[in-house]
Length: 131
Image (cartoon, rainbow, N blue to C red; front, side, top):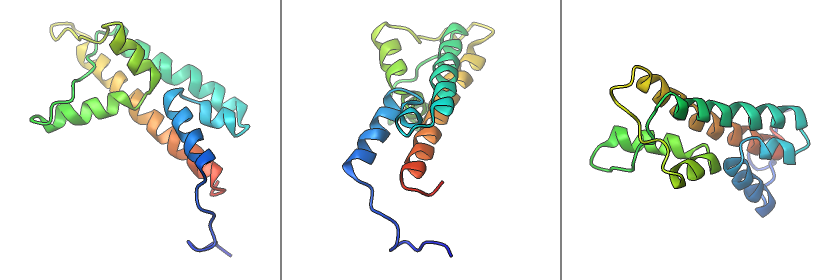
């Protein structure tokens, strides 16, 4: 028998703290929940993807509300958490449009952020007992 919405437990403050940690450090949520192998894969693969995107001269997009697609790309970029903040603080991610690898770099940066958002949702589902 499937649990109804009323039967499911409400998320606790610990769950929200775990999600914040999972966003900040990719894989931390799974590590917190005892899924060490998955956490280790995420903590290596996602920041590595982000670093490859920077190496390929991708751009960390600014939040420009006047350009909705640029704002969406910026939202996707920040999805990786601390690696984004560190890169932004170091002045990395300026992007070089004339580089042959520019679009590949952008793809790596955006996908790394979006994948981390999915990893956070997965950790949330595990914490809620849905998985």
